[in-house]
Image 1 (cartoon, rainbow, N blue to C red):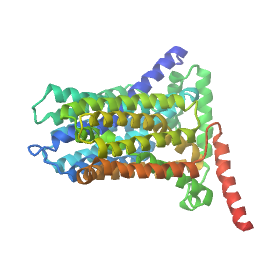
Image 2 (image 1 turned 90 degrees about the vertical axis):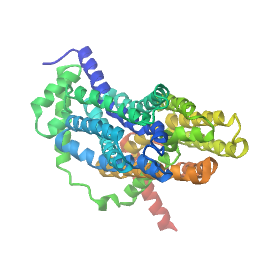
Image 3 (image 1 turned 120 degrees about the vertical axis):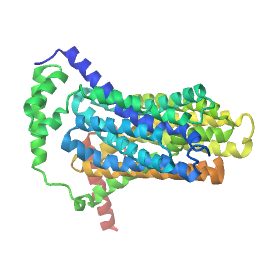
Image 4 (image 1 turned 180 degrees about the vertical axis):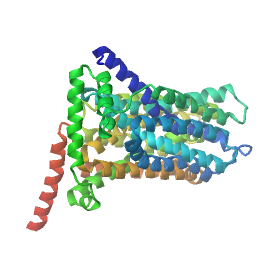
Length: 471
């Protein structure tokens, strides 16, 4: 039975809100440790050293590597909706496990499980949104997940501050911070039980009548639903006739160049230093001179800056060239960290220094989330051709999580051993390298079709070969 256009749009909005609770959990679970870590590190709690702190943060990111690697495959076998429901269960029990952890070792195990859920959500939720959304609303619906991620981090910072103030003096305050993570998981679980499976997945499994019923509910008219059903069937039939991608094809020079650029974008966007602030912002602010509670409250501004930056970045994508946004973003992040490093040397220890650091962190996050963050996933999806997208995206996303893991592990050790100025100086040097890499290698893709982008890479390789032959 078909529904009216207004009903279908309302249903799509419901799907978008509920499913992106997976993104909210992604953000909340990566952000909550920002405020909980200093409390759980206390001698009468888990008694964590700087290395242990890095391990507690980064083990989640290691779990993300495996979760993203296997999450997509499981979603292909069992369905997107089914996968998200299972992830909600893992989110719930892993969050409770973290909050009840009696020791460092148990914390590591439960954080790793939480990472599996975060990684799985990072690939399954966008895929589900892309497959249920109509083509004219796909961009807005998929980027909504990115907005929900930074909203989750913002809410984590807010609740951290509220809980710390409300339970001041309670040594177990960090346990309550981590336990809150279970609430969105409950919403996601019961919400997804009411939502449909991806029509594209249903068709791929031969469940044509079920897919048509879903399409009738989420498309404006029955004619639109039938037309899309036929289009999906034709596409799947075409894909079934293609040979599987091999690593030999990935090693083709023009494809290898794409993968090189994709991995470079993945690595440099994560090496800006953003995760040192999103994971350890409270400690950085405390190191600069704020009290613990003041640092937790001030850190809310960092979360707010991320939300504003991401919202602005989504709007800027339609106005500004991709390379311009990347170059502007890397310039902003590198300059902000350079000023923090220099300020630490000259005005460190003064009353004004904490506020200078906070201001520069906000500028950093506006640059990062407004110019660099939205470009990461968009650029990868644009430069990697459809035929190589599964394997190519898998390799690039793997590097996103691996670099995240390394930064999360070593940052507290560097901060404890060498201080704020030297630690941020390392990110400044990497930021300069990122600018050079973007200028030399990253192509402009705005306003070009995917076929034109692919042709540009193929032609570049031919020109390079001709140049070598002439010489």
